[in-house]
Structures are given as structure tokens and as C-alpha cells.
Length: 297
Image (cartoon, rainbow, N blue to C red; front, side, top):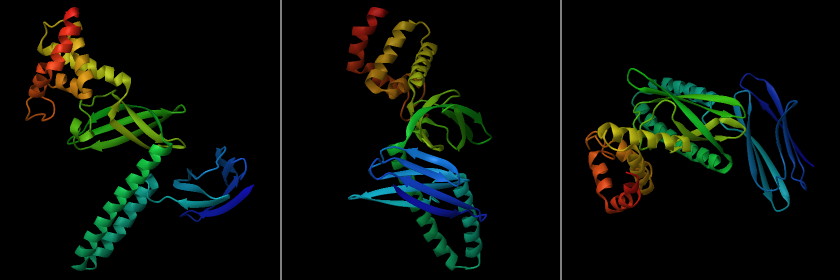
């Protein structure tokens, strides 16, 4: 049985004792902090990493296997986006500005260098977080709540993990489909896939380009309703058949062509009156409509 211990001292000088027990043969793993068990896993016989919180600090345990030996590491992740790290970055930025103001002309050069370095680090952190989500993340659905602001849109969404609700608020300057990588506009109650870290769902990422199956049905209904508003004499079953063919040929872009069919290209360059006409006049679309929808009309 391999045993390791670390002592972590928080910013307020509080000591925390972290212990690890790992069976070299069975691979069974137990990690505890002070007197509380924070992690249990089984058959850990290859490289692995785990994260957990001590107070508001994100801690990471790493296990590396080299030949028949295991090596263990413990570190504090001060890069990932957490409330404490955001406060830390704000505090560091404040001190940086105060220092730069005393340096005169040299401050311009130093500031430009630091801003470039921070941007590079932010991109690297995002890539690392994306890799971690891809490796161990799990998925569920998130429901939107949208509140109009004076200039922006406040987008709130919530999702459930193990019976607990997590609510997040985002301020998006342009609540437009192309800005969020989705073809259709967002509305209150829309549902999208969110991917989260299992032992800390606050670390997650919502993907507006991945609607749930329920949301796909909602998009279809909105596309059909828009078509019937413009052509009220059209049979609803026939219209639904055409919308389904549009989705079959173009995916969400097909629904978007139906939804924005009365919009000019200046208002929406991707989906508009012209794109709808190109879709509905295209030979594959017309052949499918003639062969499948005419019988329902």
C-alpha cells in the first residue's frame, strides 16, 4: 500500500492535511483531507488525475506510472476559472496597474508585453480545460433563462447533477446566433448540452451548437409556425414534411432557412430569403417533396 501526505496552508494560514492511500496491486485509491474522505476510485493502475476543492481552492492529485512504480503529485490549480482565481487575478491586476503608473514611459512597453502573455496563458488554460472536459467530463441538459438588459442580454441557465441545481449567469453583448455558433435564435426555456467535471460541476461548458432532442423538436415547430404565418393557406402536415426534409438535407441550417425566410441578406447573411429560395428550389429538395410530401397534401 503506497501512502503519501501533503500539508497545504491557505491564504488565511489554515493548515490542511491531505493523505493518499493507493494499492499498488489492486489499484484502489483513497484520498482524504483532514478527517474527510474526498475521493475514492478503484483499479487505478495507469496515469490519472483528480481534482477537488479545499475551501475555495481547486486542488489536483496526479498519479503517474513508470514501469512498476507509481509517482504522486499534489498541486493547487491557480489557472482554471474559479471564483477565488478570478479574485486573485483581479487583485494581481490592481497591483500591476499601481506599479506601472510609477514607471512612466516604460510602463507602456511592460503593459503590452504582459497583456500579450496573459492572452497566451488564457488560451492555453482554455485548451487545457477543454482537454480535461473531453477526457473525464459528463453531459446533461441546461435550460436557458434570458433577461433583457439596457444594452446587453443576461443569459442565465441551470442544470441538475445528482439532484443539485447549478445556476450560471452570463452577460453576452450580442445575443445573436452567429455569435453563439447556433443557427437559430435563443429563447427562454431552450435546452442545450452542458459538459461538466463530475466531482465539480461548477467547472463546465455549455455548447449552444448542441441542442437537446427536445430542443430540436422545438426548432422544427418554430420553423413550421414561421412558414404558416407567411403562407397561412398551406396544409400544416405538408409544411411539417417540408421542414423535416430541410433538416434532413441541411441540419439546423435547414430549420434556420425556414425560420428566416422573410429576412433580407443584410439582416442575416447566413439565413434569409435567398437561402430559403435556394433550398426550396434545389433539385434534391424538390424531388423529396414530390415523392414524400405530395402524398400528404
